[in-house]
Image 1 (cartoon, each protein chain N blue to C red):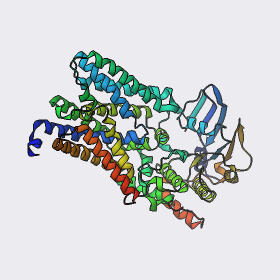
Image 2: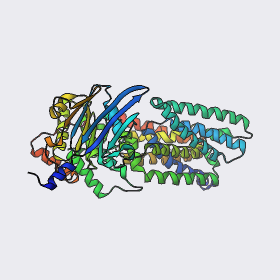
Image 3: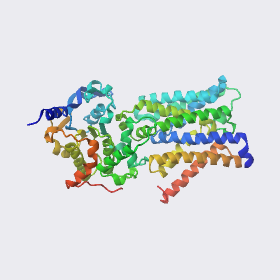
Image 4: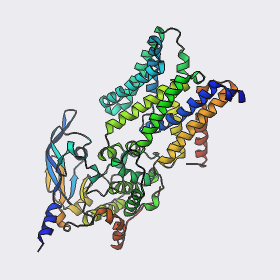
Length: 267
Length: 273
């Protein structure tokens, strides 16, 4: 255990995981409450196409994935307007498009480690990855805490927010871009197939536990950090896949909360 | 006989706050509103009444800028809608059916959110904001519910919360979209009594959309002042209540509940479901 904690790769994994354990659930809370839970899956599937392109052209894959995810977030907003009453259709279209593009790229690339981006490879985080995660974390935290009240109003009541003079379009794009940023850097930690769990499951727990919005913020961040750190330790000790362990730990926690609520101990 | 100052003040408080001039709106090539025109003067109580599908909510959404007209012009406080910036002068109570009962927000958080439209970056909630929130909750008789989750409240209580949120900015124009939909008759009466009281004693203009007429007609008169298509406009002008009052709503909110109670009119606060 001591040896594991002292190793450089594990310390980088803990640091990167901790940062994503804070930002992903935080942005996920707004996404879930706005009924856009599927946006995480969609952006991650598009980002993976960018990652694959990065491998093909020899550019830092996470950066290309990030560019793809941001472009997709704008495209989703555009499609949402076209299919206003079927907003989820825009997510389904983008998700299929992303994975279709990725499947073509995968066949073009040489020496591409696909599974590390599909299922995550937190132990392979290098200094560049950590720096990218660090910058994204700072940007996301500054924007969210500077605009927490406005984001709350928009999430709670979009019409009232608009009548209060808040520019809805700007905020919608802002939430999508922040989500794209977080997802792109989180892919290497839990993988494209599992990243949306970090956005949605802590929010699902907060709907059981929290009475106020302030409490919700505290709950999602606590659960995110607990799951990432706990999952990494369990995975390290028992030699399990870290991404999957983190997600299963969150699901176990959610099940415990649901059981407690059933017996009226909470909620 | 009124003094010159009083006459000037009375004239000033009867300016048009909402001007709708030949406004049309079409949705998917279907004309919903066809060249509708009307004006709401300061301190009027203006009822927009019509059957389902008459276009009343559409008209309200056009007035608050949520959708754009396909023709005509809307002015708020004399300014064209696209240049209007003083949104804090407007209190808006939307239809409540959009509320998700699981949403994690307390009554206090919802009422305070009425102040967020004009917040600056990193602006923390000040003691003054909390006082305003307390006054608005007290005025609506919901101070005991401050820490409750909004989804736990009854329909009538939720409407009081949204009214308190709209009141926190001390607006001069209140816009209510079907505020009593889904609320039992007794609570509707209590709610409308509260709205009437604010109109008569607190220098506010009201624009209210409703399909349920009996209660509104009792206050605004049995005959519509004007019509446009399937929409009827009922108006109670400010001179029918009292002359322009000088008191500022921000100062008067605190006393609103006390005044209502001293008038021995019951304000029913439903139980938490």
